[in-house]
Length: 143
Image (cartoon, rainbow, N blue to C red; front, top):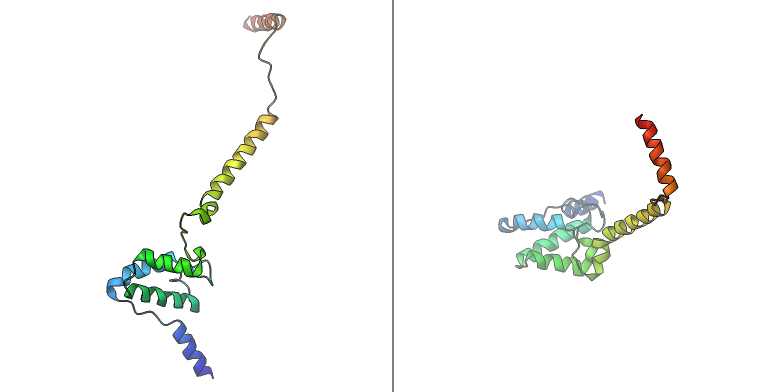
């Protein structure tokens, strides 16, 4: 029983044999795809069975002549945009890409409105009487 378990674990973490001409593209693609189990690791970094299956799938696609964008599109179609570390900019992901900037703009607007409301109004027009008083005070300080 233990032997069968060890064989299963060994198969799950077995390295994928990649043709030398695809080696760089393979690793670049793996670094762009998120492990759906770990969620904070790429499929290259993850030891999960799903990540291993995804590595095998990427290798198969490369061996079948798929371009990098075709591999990315296949993975996104099959597993959703969450599998991509850099989701594509499209209507479904606008909030993801532009939401933080929109949120920041709203916060800045609210802060400016609050500050403007708190600012005391200063009377800039002086009456003739006030001007005379101010002149007399300034004359006294000069002397």
